[in-house]
Length: 453
Image 1 (cartoon, one colour):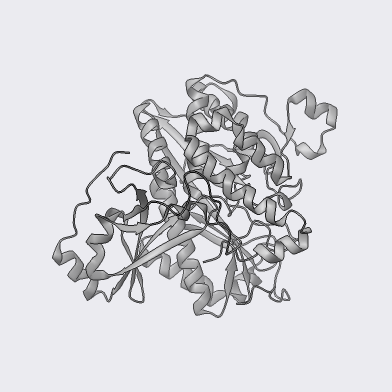
Image 2: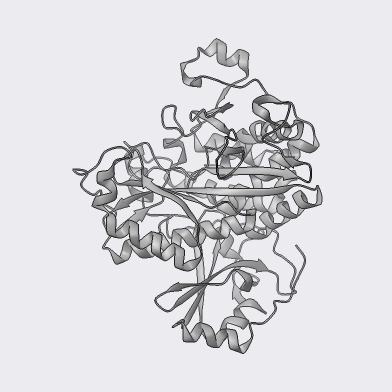
C-alpha cells in the first residue's frame, strides 16, 4: 500500500447521513490479538477521521486479551504516535444513530504502518492481482449465545441444528437478518449449530479486504442485536471447556482470465495445476501459520479430533475432519469450487488470517508445490503408521509449540513480513507467560468474553 489522501465526503453526503439520523461514526481496527479496537467522532468530523486521521499509540498493536496486558517491544511502546484513518468507501449506516467504517494504521508522515493487519491483507490482495489472480473469500461466524454475565443459558429447547433453536431465539435471529440487510451485509445462511445455544452465519463472498471488513461489521451487528434482546455472544474458540468450541472457517476461491482454479481442471478433484499448487501451499504452511489462524491461549482446547476443527494437516473433498476441506463445484450451486480452511477460530485477526491463507496459496502456486494425496476418510480413524505413510500430521494443541513454530517460520515472515509476525508472537507469548498454570476450565471461564462485541 502507498500513502494516500482520502477523498473528502461532500457536504451533501454528510447531510444525508445526518438526515438518516446518524450522529456518530465508529472506526474500528482489529489488533494482532484479535481484539476489535475503536474510536468515534461526531458525524461532522467524518472527513477528519479519514484524513489526516486520529492519533493512536503504537501500544494498540500490543493490547492483549486479558483486559490489562500490553506486549511491549522495541516497536510497541510509549513513544511515538500513529494515525487511524477510516476508509470512506466502506462507510455504512448501521442504525440507531451510528455509522461504521473500517480503519487502517498510518505513520504520521502518511506511510502505511507495517504491522497494520488490514494493510497487510491489502498488500497480499495486490500481489495476487499482479499475478493475474482474483481471490474471493467467504467467512463463517460461529458464536455461542450466553447471558449478559457470560454464564451458560438453558438448553431445554435445543437440538443439534434443530428448529427449536431458531424458534427459541426467533426475535434475535430476525433482528440480525434485518440489521445486516439494512447495513449491506450479505448473510447466506443463519442456523443453529451443534452445541447448545450455538449458531453459525455464513457471509457472502467478496474480495479479501472487503470480505474481512464485512466480517467485522457482521460481528458488530450480532453483538448489538444480542444486547437489544438481553443476550450476549461469546466469540471464544472455547467458551466452555467441555464443548466443541467455535470456529471461524474461511472459504476462498481463485480464478484467472482462463477461468477458475478449483474446477474444470485436469488435476485432483477437478483442480487446475495452479489450483493444486494453491491448496498444497496452504497445507504445507498450516503448521507454521497456526499461531495466526488459531494461536490464542484457549485455541488448543478446540484443536482436537472429532470437533470438526481440522486437527490433522491433510486435505479431502468434503472431509470435515481435514484441516483443508475441498468443496467441489456442483451444478446449480451459487458458487464454484472453493477451499475451506477449518482450523481458523474467532480469536484470529480476520485480516491477518486471510493474508496468511492467501499468501501461502500464492506461494504454493509460484513455487509449484506438489499436492499430497487426498485423504478420503476421517484421519483420526487411520493408524499412526497409515498417517505417517500419507504424511498426515496432527496439528499441535500446545500454544507454546504453536507460537514457537510461527516465530521461527521463514515462510510466514517472507509472506507477511516481520512486523506482523512479531506483533502476533508478542501478544500470544504474553498470555502464555501469565496464564500457563490455569487448567482448561479456568482458561475457558477467563477468556469466554475476551473477543465479544
